[in-house]
Image 1 (cartoon, rainbow, N blue to C red):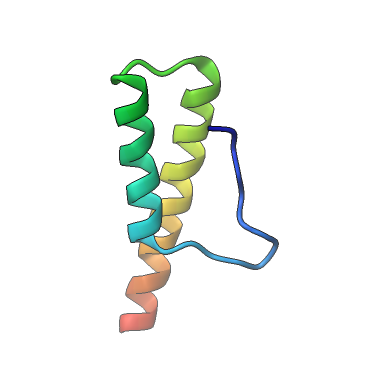
Image 2: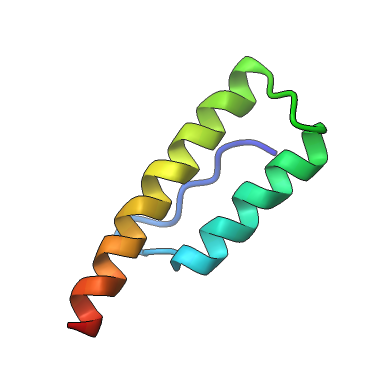
Amino acid sequence: MPLTPPPHGAVRSSSELNERIRDLWLRTGSRLSTDQRREYAQLVTEWAAAVREEMVKAA
């Protein structure tokens, strides 16, 4: 699956990003190509930001 960043200003939830990360691992059988490693890194970075944002909103 190609990298598909959200539209400018849109933020995906941590649960949506977690689902995409899990799907990536399931599709690849835990062996990531170079492009898939980039996608994984992008998703994990975005997931971490989403978690932080959700914690700030909850506080």
